[in-house]
Length: 139
View 1 (cartoon, helix red, strand yellow):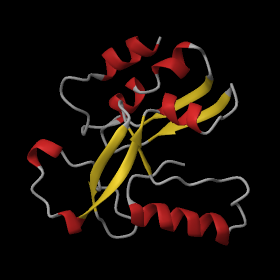
View 2 (tube, rainbow, N blue to C red):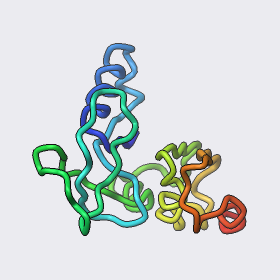
View 3 (spheres, one colour):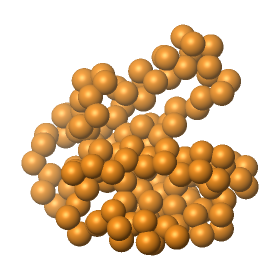
């Protein structure tokens, strides 16, 4: 699991241990993105999904109110973790940023490395990224 928000990553790790699932679930405090590097993310309370990466050019939030996180493309994450050649399931739920994460997994998608892909579509998607265009680009 990749989780941008530090508090939520800690919660997910706790839940994996509490349910005796930590041998099956690995939680990484990493932001899935269309590019790799680092970013600042707003600190949020446990369970909040509105962390989001902060735009470095309009960074108005104080540093103590944000966390520096690693951001990786899914392609780079798969390589970094040396995951199997075939991934059975990838679920993307990034509160409207899903098309960008999909851009960051073009290599895995084009090589048919991912068997099943699920992503969230909502009114939060950027206006320039229609569902139709995204589905066409995945074909």
